[in-house]
Length: 470
Image (cartoon, rainbow, N blue to C red; front, side, top):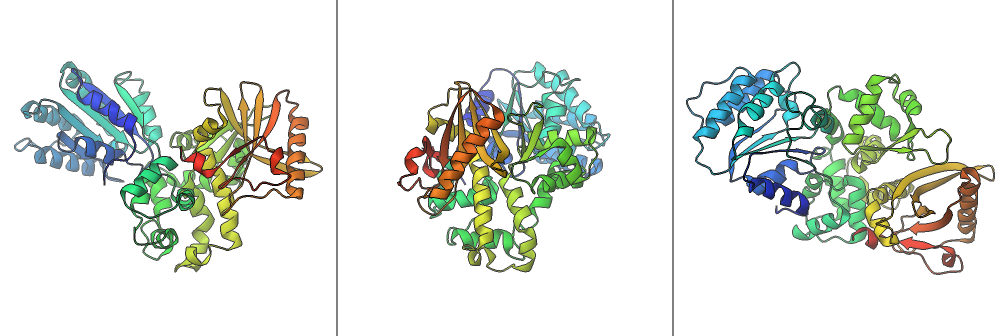
């Protein structure tokens, strides 16, 4: 499978490879996003040394795996190390033996290597600061899925590795544009509308998309990949959080609480919903989930107290939380049979909102405001005694606010008389509640645009699914 996208990351890594001094790069990003694939595709034939951590492996297991790779890459005869200082000393000796002009060292999933109370970080500190950095030919790449661990221990390290990184790369999920290129490269016959639904289920996670069978329809693939008894992704939700975090159960409780309210929860509501005390542990969990791109934090719009709202935005987590219990009842051809059901319709509207949120850059481009400083919110207020919710608010630094209504449909969306009245009421309620002095415009974000009628002319601007592929 060839590399798709990642042009900026490839350019950075090749520049570091071709540098005339030793370089130290850290790559992080959630599980299955393609970190290992990227590095191995670029440099797999050039490695002087490569080793990966073992999930849930004790210190002895990690060292055994590292020692085995030392031997495999030319360290025969070196005594197996029983601690990390010795392991990195062997790595020094291995590099000195190497005839390669550029010594590329790739340590994958180092959060797994650095078991509790191990001497992994002091060993890495010793390797880089006392030896590799003084040479001109070492290119060290460290990688990890646990973004919070990478931030605390490598990127923002306050001890021996402080300010030692040359570059850091956060590898993100594919955009819809990159997904389209991926599907074309795999010769998977699929429309943009179907690509959007695939994104709403699997996100832009390359590994998940790679499991799709070109001979199956999208719905057949979803059934095979998620709903079938032996489906590859049947246990992926638990595996995802277990691979990212120690004490994963508490993280899952927070994610489950957030999954019950699409607009998000305040910190106090997260604490209540997850039954985790509002203290340091909850602070760490919310930070870790934010760094991994699973949730986002934004400020409440229009409130005197600008408290944070936490919102679950990971498509696969949202999908699993919605359909896990149903899957236990219908494990065969469920997605095909439910395509026209109310449950599918309710989920798709909710999931399309998150897809749009993940493609904010494309929305801003379509609106012609890519260069304008913006903030994005959701909002819930009162309109005529009933709750009024606005899916996406784009607060612009040019004194304009876009109130975005997001609608997912299989054809052009028709604004009815009653919905037009609802839109007007929402806009009035928003202006009255927030007392904004900015110009307020209504933007419709749909799949195939608006059906022209008497009410569509009142819409200030439109964004369609095709615009999200830009």
